Image (cartoon, rainbow, N blue to C red):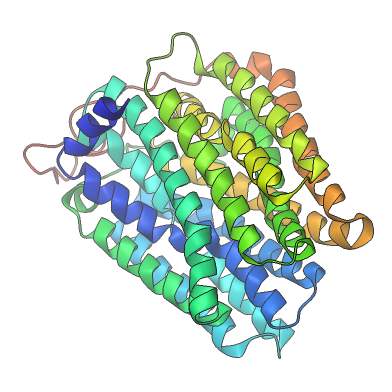
Length: 419
């Protein structure tokens, strides 16, 4: 298990790109948690907390594919770093102004979400150029998903630690400052500066002209909805048990379960089409969410959260392969950004619905939304099986630039991703 991941990390630039991307994504990975805790500390209701988090998620959903398309057209450095700075300034405005002016608060989280840099999609576009072989790229996707879960495990604990040591406002400022540094590390790297997208067919739909990609996005909207509802439901559960730290432990357990599942998934080569494998994984993911409605004591609930997370990273890693197989040529960053977008829209819907659900029916109702989201994600995959069975292309890692017109490739590594 570890040997395969170490082989990836020993590749030139790989460790830096992975670490920089994870650090750069820390603000977006913890934004919903930080916004909810900040709003509650300022005296806002669960409904307001969910609404602000939903605006952030929806704004991210709008911004990611637009910024992803810009990356495909203009390269990574020109887009990623400026977007990261503007996003951080939006969160800084929220931290400094608070909730005294709600329009300004909504505007701040909207700017922060809209300009969230598409680092996640950018990294997956870089893996073929850095690693070269298709098997190594697929293993990198699994490692990428595992590394995300490390961030989702550590991130909530870091946010709650900053809140306890200083304040929720300080947590927002520190997390976003760290994020800018991560983005800076990525865009200054040689692969990021040299990467160019493959030539693309001019089409206003871009990556969305792929029916298989649309089917995948429809399913992962509901996975995002489940995760978004758990964010709010976890806060309500922690409030009901009188300890703010319970929330951090629940989110960390969820991430830890996903980390273990992703590590096991990435340790072996899988035979057969990833589309079929994804249906099985999502079915198990939905099965893990349903017991959360029991809301037992803290120890048992933490264990259930860990179990619920086990199939999350495998589902994400497998979805990367499906995106890679169905994305039209020249739209790789945009296609991966659309996957991030569906998570954003789904998470926004989950947080928006879970807030009122807590106030109307209690914590159990908000966790029920997570279970329903998992089941709906599976139903979408089952209903679109024929569409997903026909990939738009076969993902192949290649040597050389996607776009040879500029020849901007350093000796020793290739640039881009090509059909």
